[in-house]
Image (cartoon, rainbow, N blue to C red):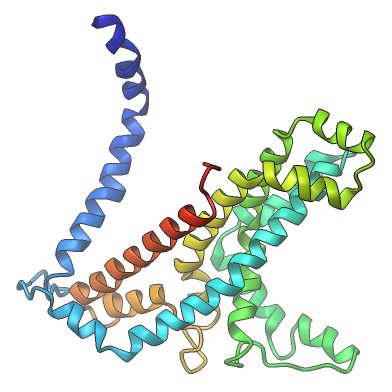
Length: 288
């Protein structure tokens, strides 16, 4: 019995520090937010239990539904863009032989910069007299007020977030590509398979676990976007970039309705969890 218990106990001791941190900074705050969502907690620490009143208020709140629509549109733009850019750069790095480490570091560099710094740089690029409009003017396509346009602001923000965050997913996919046995590719070449056939029949199927992981984390990231919007648009113009996280920030730290802000947070948690489970059901089955 002592011998059978030795390995599980040893493993538990190794993961215990991370488990404690996960409980303190993830599980307990989530449970606290769930309890707070049932109160009218304010900045003075005073609160009363209101039950489901906050959820009824949220159901009838047009700001919530507008922010949910904005968040879904943003996710529909950001997630495919980031996955495609990450996959494309991973494939290029996997094919590069000369100075691969340098190119990998250069592509990963934006990921380790702050969102505030990235937002300031890209805000300057998108300005009316910025770099983008300077290039568009030279080809008679500009200038364009990108951040002041309700139809262009979300794609513009998605590009910024993609540039900032694709490096992590790129490394995940690159690791997945490195795990594919080279003998499979050699056998396909001998059989006369072209580049597209090898990618479709060998690379893509064997890369599905990594692609599924990237899809899930980028979907979660798209629902948590805040820094870029806070720095670049402040939810505008006309709330065209007013996402769920920005709505939580306003409810909590502008109007000091912490109980109601927690309600928004719990609904966001439920939405992200549901989407992740759906992705696992239809895309990750047999690959994780």
